[in-house]
Image (cartoon, rainbow, N blue to C red; front, side, top):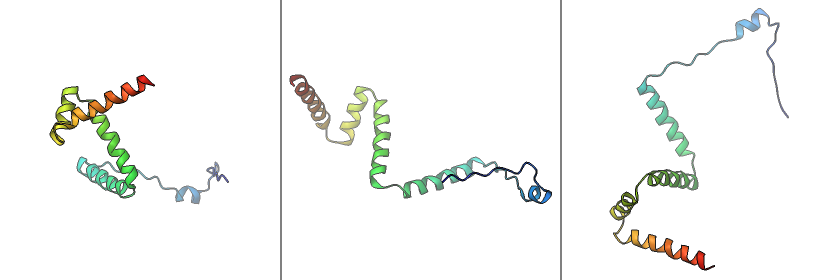
Length: 102
């Protein structure tokens, strides 16, 4: 069911008097920051774990895509053990070789 309503083109004075024009206030930068902070808190509170994980995955992927190969290697080695980068590269190379054989 679709509900639709149109304004009365021949509105009476009482109908016109009942209409109020609402203007949005201009927010200061501090007020806008507070608005954003409150809204983000509501959005995050309403997210499930799967949605949060996807959001974080997307953000990190975007960030790491901007890294050079050397920066990415340094990042991986700085936040994990120094052998992880080599292990991950080896996994990729083996996977690619397996695909070529098939």
